[in-house]
Length: 290
Image 1: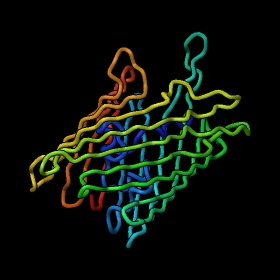
Image 2 (image 1 turned 180 degrees about the vertical axis):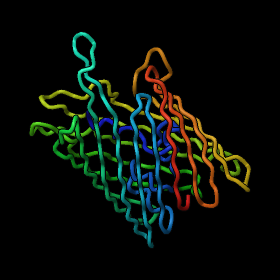
Image 3 (image 1 turned 90 degrees about the vertical axis):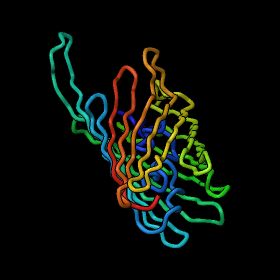
Image 4 (image 1 turned 120 degrees about the horizontal axis):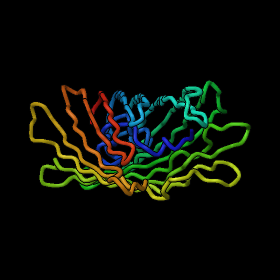
């Protein structure tokens, strides 16, 4: 177990668009990537998502935000649980135990002229076979700009600065990232959007100078979203690809999905191909202006 799950997205929009951080436009789920993103809609917003991974583990995510004037306040919660099986030298099942990871966070954002700036704190918990690790604490900071009549959007964020859950009194530092995201609205109507995301990763310190294995120093994503010309029932089709993990026998990171806006309620689905592991499915529902 580790805090490496912090490197992946939590919303169907982001999953479908190659893990691009600007995917969940106007949704409180953007708290996961950049706390500055809350300030682009007035009033309250809520986002829920559920994912089933290739090995059967469940992931739940909740985010809520409230904006008044130039200020925004948000909160988020995360839960991931799965089961592992221990086998002896003869391959016989010796025991089955449950892994659980939790996160609770609070964020604040403010608009300063054309810039939106934000900061967030997160507390992480972890249990393994009923044993509780020492909690971790993280800080996120970010800034976001929209320009050229809101057709371009730029995001900068430093995430997961701090400690991950750890055992035996030894401190472990979380896999932190420094990220840049860019979104461009294409065409005269802006119904086609191209998203790019780049994140430099400082892998998690496992103690004794060791680093989290199999984590690339650069994560990148490319996504394309097309808003169909159906004003009676707005629908978005999404396609993406994420780089950062090596799978020689399969195209790691291919993804796709669909979103439907039904009277201000947003329903989203994403499928992500995970190479030799298979695929992951994520469903989400959110409410609030986008």
